[in-house]
Image (cartoon, rainbow, N blue to C red; front, side, top):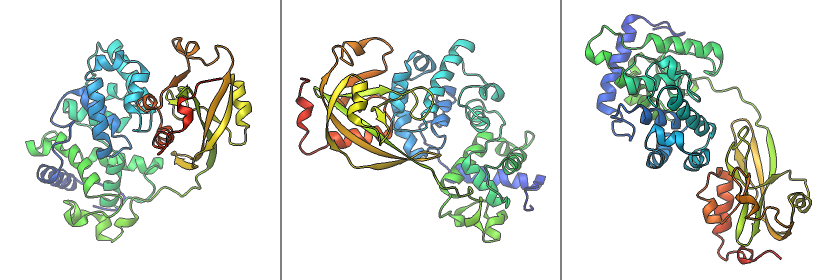
Length: 383
């Protein structure tokens, strides 16, 4: 094997056999989405596992299946219902795409999950690696995966330098992934594409980890270039450092008759289609801002400022607690907000915590409801 990723047949055979034997002895075998050919469950798990660790996914996966046990129940649910079950898991476009894909499968495939990897790849929210994983675990297809864990394994084992997110590096890693697939005409143990694929996932999650890799327990150590050259810690090449831009926003916790005001976010953008507290610029006048909504408020208190980090920027959040003094007749009243499709709603805080809300809003509400002495405004009526 040479740095740069040239793969001989002997290395390919060694790689697959070692991994399959290791997985059967040391890999994970009892995750809730394993030991099934149910394409719906496999698909759901693979979407949830995108950029999210197994331990975080498991409780969400189980709750989601309790609410939406099959394709039809997911497709017929409202987006609000789906988002509520996803709330807290992050990367909310996954939930929107999951819902959209379920509806497409019902309308275009008669409710039957497509078997061909290239067809699976056309579903919303499904990329090349995810489509391959679904094909492998649901249908036994021979397809290569290349998620973040696998990129790390290949970069170290074959001495591939360069940030894996760069196109030319990723192309090289895909070539390796395809070349290492167990051959169709080999013995049954070497042909077991499911065990091989699961081995890659397990090795990256438990042995060849980003920090503190357990090289002494790795089945690939004898042929690993990074281990041989003592450069495991420097591979894969990290993302080029960039200064993360910072933004600020005020979240308004507007209270009237014990209820708080929530606003439906647009489908596009951060927290798309989630319910959130009204948001304004930090330098805006909160009294005037609320008057534009038809409500008069007074500032009760300012909660502790905190930061929430997104992929491309860091948001500093300034939560403000406001009491409604009066509001225009009918404006933002429960009656006015009861119309279907309305983008505003009044909710009791405990009900809001069960709704589809982003993590920072949940943090604000939890802090608000956990005060030792609940604010008197919870029980106050409008003037």
